[in-house]
Image 1 (tube, one colour):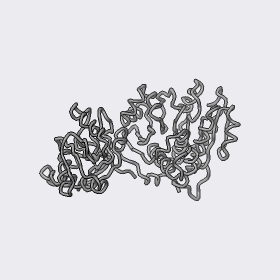
Image 2: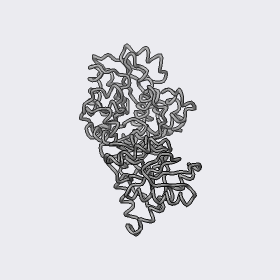
Image 3: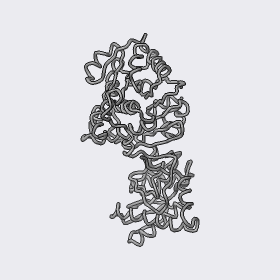
Image 4: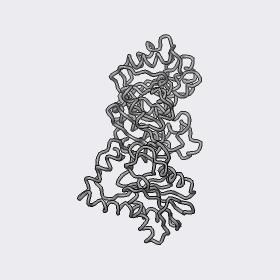
Length: 451
């Protein structure tokens, strides 16, 4: 269901398992250099003058072998720290063992590569990117192409490193695959989503209660409820503050609608919760004291698997509950939950998701181009099927509805979150127009990718 994403220690272990290691290290380096050279010739056939910046470690050795093979192929390759005038720059300063901030001389070399105006091909991963986390502590190469060995690295999939990698090509150098701590979700994860059977009723197919939709943001809850039905939930109740009920009635056809007053909302919704198999809290709910109190009351008083998003996350504090819980913040929302800066979360996405999962004892789905699903037990899944067109208002509400539908169908919370993120991304890709995509387009495309 998932493919491995390798960190530095896992790559080192894979190399050590290679027959004859360490005496056979030269074989691996030769294959790595050959792979880089072959990809350079394939991707940049017109590049005649190539400047290679090679460090002193194994990554530099891979780069020097690539440079030798490129010379043998008739290219003018020089090894220097000055890429001025190059048609192509080969970046082989640092490999998977690098972490932290480059030293001043390396920083200057990286800056010269980035300023050269020539495309940069990075060997294994862009210099300055931490292979195990994707973190960047200082300068980092902005590659047009990265030729990585054995398997994709965590740092090539997780931001900010993923934004420096360019196009990624994985080269097989003869190492054996092995389990990794961080994995990437594939479309096969959707096979875990239960399909309706002949014996199912609308309730057994997944019954979801969506609570949100205050006046002015009612459409957020409508999107979540509609998306849940498009994700094959059999029954959805859409509960909104009573003043928003007429809008919900006008916008949403299929969900059952329920209006509530803040004074007795938890009591009003108790019957709906009893016949639901999951709960979705927060889309458009508002950030009033009453809204926050309702979120806490529903989390404490129900034993339903629950996804909490958007306004439901505002001011959220850990709640003692045994039922599965999924939080779906973006970087800014997670920063508030951790009392940190948004920039820190964006720079340390794996660590931020892990901290939140531990603090709230919940599965955390940290949204982004590299959506990260982190469970309290340490399970970490990167779900990066989503296209850039998803960066538009309302798509997060659609994702909430999909997570809620999958929880209602009985999926484990980590599987529900990962499958929802994959389905969400694939649905966006299935929309014929990527320019001008809106959230309802994504919801409408869900049946295509789930069928």
